[in-house]
Image 1 (spheres, rainbow, N blue to C red):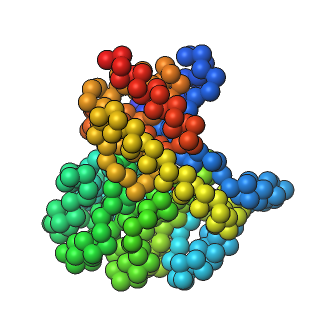
Image 2: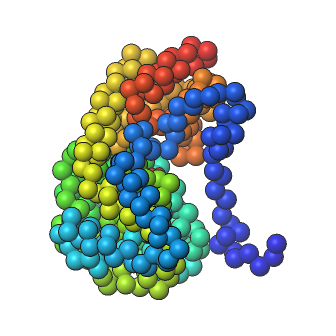
Length: 361
Ligand SMILES: Cc1ncc(COP(=O)(O)O)c(C=O)c1O
């Protein structure tokens, strides 16, 4: 079809994974262990589900456009004003709005590599030039990224903990890098997995100290609400206000907001998930060691490991045994796979399947 924007024509379309139902039907599997998208294996908080169910009675009305109640609750939690919060249809919407509002065609965007694909995607969508800075020793090369930004970048994306490595950087190192980034570069710190990370890092003070810092968070991971599509950005009102001009006023639905509010109150569910993840990682690390496979110690709810053979083959062999993981070829790591930490039973099934899959090769 003619008329497609040049930027869009140049992009590779996103290829979503096959729907789980289709995979199960094709392979005749009845219980697939789904460890490919870093979801919470405990599911959502029952309190979030109850709140969404109660909110159903109001679905004939439009939601309050700015999710005011959720912004006020987050403001309390962060001890920052409510107009520092933008609620999005997933944190994906926050990234897209930043790109739509701040990028002109040809502007530079600095991204880490490998990392979450959405940063590159939103930049390319706006016709921006993407400068990818390779990780150094599995962590972000902050000095190199700051240097790339100093050559003139509108946006710089950071992911902490990083997907797919699960690694973090120290706050002091970020502060040193921020001193070298021009104030005109917005620095987006994507903290989708922050609640799993037990290392010290004060996002609140960062966003207060640096007017060009944006923090992104999501309800998709530890809160177990990926299907609701709810995330948020924390940033100064001067940075945030223009985003409302581009935003679809009803992008965040009332059910998600009600569920999000209840999820924030269910501290126990978060704690249980954190403990499950911590124990699950220890179990997976021990298994990788026994199998003689390298892995990257992770601060998130997934672990990247080196299968020392083509990941696509290992992926297929695991899938035939009913375990779905993420092969990392699209991240530029053709021998690596990423596995989400599941329940103890799911982790055990993954390790059994992996042993069998490696024995095949
Ligand atoms: C690093 C990172 N950021 C953001 C997201 C997406 O979050 P959301 O579901 O809020 O759009 C993901 C999802 O996998 C992710 O891995």
